[in-house]
Image (cartoon, rainbow, N blue to C red; front, side, top):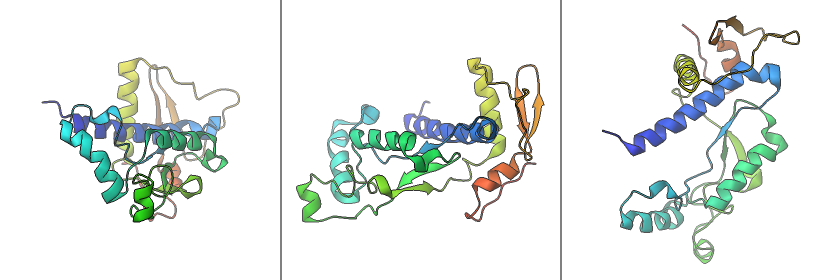
Amino acid sequence: GFDGAKAYKDSKLCLMMLANFLHTKYHKTTGIAFSSMYPGCIAESPLFREKRAWFRKYFPIFMKFITGGFVSEHEAGQRLFQVVHDPRCVKSGVYWGWNGGPREGRGAEAIEKGGQISGGGGAGGGWDSIFENDMSSKVLNLDTAYTLFTSATRITGAEWPYEQSKHYQPHPNLEVKVQPEVVRVTNMEGEMNTMLQGKNMTVAMP
């Protein structure tokens, strides 16, 4: 049967993989930054509308006063705006997060602020606490990312910019093969390994 929680998590995984794939495929030739972000747990959004009433009532309280991971919809929007607007976020192929220990600022001061801690919501600090978060091995799986991209393109009928033009200068780590319906990109490990420098991780295409 349908598992709503798993579907939600899978959709987040797919969005991150697609952002990485588009970064590898188009960033060098277009200058467009492709990135993803984790704003924190938005505990009062309609995400939990199908949960039991007691959960919808107490989960935000738990996130505010126990874990400190609560983020309001307003602050989540501010973080999205920051990724779009902040000059530090022009870097492509990044998974953005916000620093700040979940118990930072606990105690009477936090209670007086309605449970909110560093930043407007709690899961991390303010504008200056943004950082490049780590990505899981599932997110960085190039085989799955390619299958996701081609399958989504076929299902939706999406048309992507043609990569070959008189102004096109292929990146040395990319080998582009143009087919009637799909532009296939192979040999992308160099680009992905550049993203992973300093994280003691590498990837390799089969």
